[in-house]
Length: 183
Picture 1 (cartoon, rainbow, N blue to C red):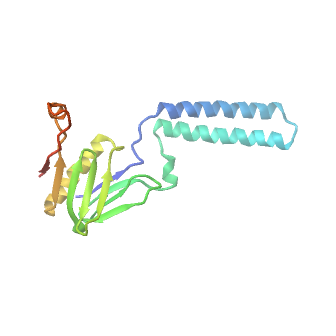
Picture 2: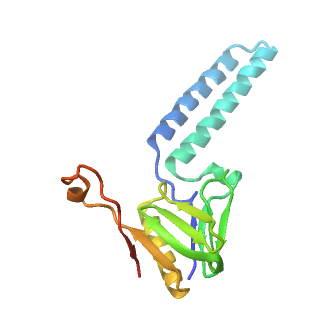
């Protein structure tokens, strides 16, 4: 089984980015209008034209990303989750380093809501932080990790969230969370 998720794909619409893009478009129009009205041929006139072009480019980028059509971050790098029978690989953001662990090096996996701590046989840990990932993708990752870990006889520990009555019970403090094996 293999799971590959492109984290730059499947963006939702961002009305704020669309609004910023429209503001940049208005600024671009203003600079082009000033450039057309004041055609003295000076270097200042040329700079007004360049400003108009830059604002037009910024408006284009913001509107396209705001509509969720394309992520221009792809021009600079990748962001993905790749889980297969050989390894677990995560590159959470474009500018972050790729994290890779082979299944043969995995001792156990601790799950806590949207965070997975993979304990290696040499004692090192790798954290898969999926807190900024959509819930349906987190569910797919969890299912894939569970299935492959079960095939490879790797223990998965899941921490339960305390119930509301346990959290604010007579003791006044939160009880420690239990650990159970997920199959």
